Length: 417
Image (cartoon, rainbow, N blue to C red; front, side):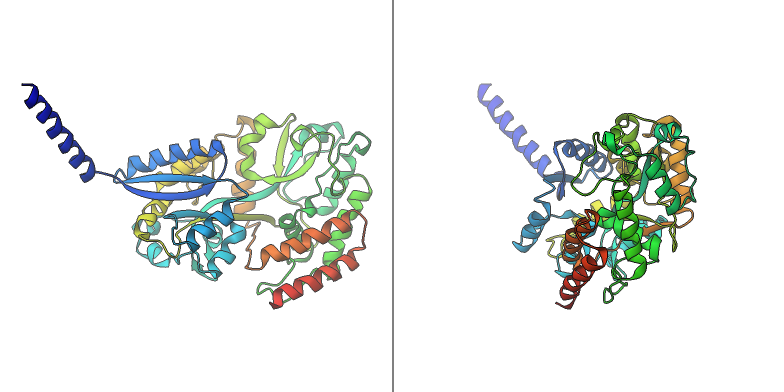
């Protein structure tokens, strides 16, 4: 009996191994970046994916923010690419031009799931390059001005409406400042290069360069007026000079107006020590846009089996995938689906949900008031130059005309390479 038992156990084990092999889920290796908390979210997303596609299993690897770009480049260059990876907006052009990212047009065109959905065009643009779709949109968001309503009330100021102007912004910034206490009316928004580009669009109708990146505008009169505008706010004590920190952080009233992303509405209710609201960027002489951008999920150009990676990307486009991204990852849905947007805004404190919905859906998206930032291959080098010279202007170390003349020379040299 004992021997039969052993043989039975061996037979059962063998059959179990055969069954497990027969029904083993196909692994899909996904690489992204984040912290320990990111693992928890992706465990839940992977579980939702596996529930819908039990024949596949998502294996998630997470790198730190600092190491991520280099790690992805090395994986692909060494011939050991992931099946799916996250491409930052700032690296899209560079990685496409370097041949790291696969053109996904064929997958989109034959996907019934993709055809059945109506996606926001600007989100699709964020996952496209030179008219070709190269990813699946992810984490699209717009900037906004986070405003301290308590401070406005104390200063006798009404909360601005959606059509406020840069002149009003200046007045509010000055009246909301207490520089002697280390409290400022505004964050030095224009020192952030992406926001600076957005402010330039509102002041002049264009960013730093034209669309084909052959003509520079940073020495134009309108752009120099933008720099003077922000230099004046620093001189008036309404904004801190670069390198000067407020007495408190932005959530505690160190700045009474500051730039943030609209999806931060989820955290504002627990982090802000004051009554808050979010506003579109103010209208300048030329336009009333608010900056936006989005990242994307991509397939490596040398993927061993791109069909496997597309299984996950296609799921992200499906109602089930979108539901998971919204509820687990607190990211915006890709389409105008009322149910998904209800879920997205449900994490905002109850008395702010209508305000946030109006800001995003009615003002920014409904009135086409977003300016989607499209980075290009030389962006990192151009960005580095502007990060060098903008602080010099705002610290009063160099006149704007001189600083931008030198910046222009360096940028022109980069563009000619």
